[in-house]
Amino acid sequence: MITQNTDKTPDATKEKTTDIIKDTTTDKKQEARRLAIYLVLSFLLAWGWFFLTIRSGETWDDMSSEKQSLVALGMMCPLIAHILTRLITKEGFAMTGEGSMMLGIVFRDRKWIWFLLAFILPWAYTELGNVFALLISPETFDPTYYQVLDVDRRILFLLPVGALVTGTVASFAAFGEEGGWRGYMMPKLFSVMGRVPALITGGIIWGLWHAPLTCIGHNFGTDYPGFPYVGILKMYIFCTLVGVMLTVLTEKSGSVWPAAFMHAISNAHPAILQGFINPDKAADTILSDLWSGMLISVLLVLIVFLLILRKRKGMHLPKIA
Image 1 (cartoon, one colour):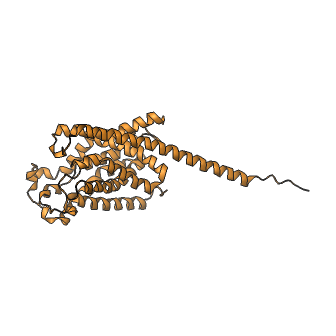
Image 2 (spheres, rainbow, N blue to C red):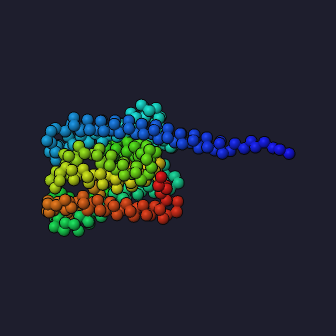
Image 3 (cartoon, rainbow, N blue to C red):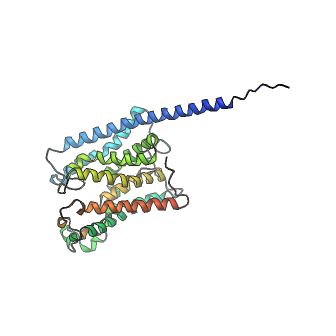
């Protein structure tokens, strides 16, 4: 008996594969378009605000605390750009879940661990950074420098706790950044270019975004060799390293809040040794400042952090795309 071969599986499979490739390409183009809109808004809003509120030739140290707070409002621009982008692209404003703004807070399924790490990591790399700073520039050690800072010796050892509390409570600026960078930019970068390139690119974008502030001495001051270009380069490196930890915390917790808390606590400098380091005694070299020690410590803490995540059961990182 003769039977007719009606098997069209190869052609069907080919067509299906082609459709998947087309869909993937379309999704990437759409995500790239959304990312571009977000980045343009983030930079235009923030840099516009910085240039509007900062007078020509003015440095961060020249400003009153009120003026500094006014300039710092620009830190809310990444979150504002996130909201505006969702309005333009009609992506919706879900609080939790895939494609959401990740503003919800969930402690179940051991997600509280990531909030705890958000409090611990800044103190770990800040204090370790001070240790490296002293090793790099031992001449900066000053056993009475805490008196210059107008800090009682007994209170000095409570500085990490104070930074944790004040950083968490006064975290609006950090939330403004993380609500944009981790809440929108990084998921889009992952979709467009894969994990490792996205982490590097995200750090560079974040560092460049800080450039106007770095140029007025907000991050490293103004009295260092290679100002402000060396400072901008350091921000690229620092933002890339810290950005990896912030992104992982956001992914694992499903929320931008751990990243916002970690960012804010880091800004509050939770360290005891800072009361014994006099930066005015540092030699006039690129590697002699406190931030050089900080960069080394952040790198080491990041490596340990990632190794622990990969080894612990149920806490491994997603595979690199």
